[in-house]
Length: 113
Ligand code: AMP
Image (tube, rainbow, N blue to C red; front, side, top):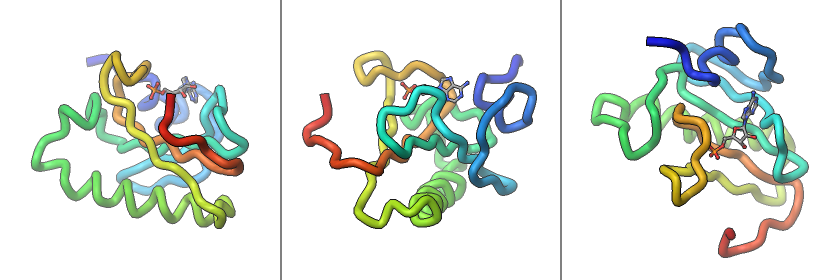
């Protein structure tokens, strides 16, 4: 199977600004930021989207959330931040490799558009 766009960033086959990585997840800056700080954190495993995660993915998903919080702290988002998973076309999902948006650095409106 061919690699997803985000696998290629994780494997440094295409450019990306990686801010954190370990054996399970990689965090890199979004190419089209929607906030002053906009980072995507992805599992190295190419799970398509949260709705297709399996019970065996529980550990990596928990790890991803804990690391998202750690990355947010490291990036200085002490005033708050938002974690977003877009799942499917109605949510505007564009890249079929599960990713958590870490957004911060400005007041974020609620509810989202
Ligand atoms: P989503 O709509 O949740 O699927 O979000 C996909 C995100 O990936 C968007 O915010 C894009 O700006 C971002 N994106 C697309 N291509 C790249 C890339 N090559 N490097 C970094 N971020 C990207």
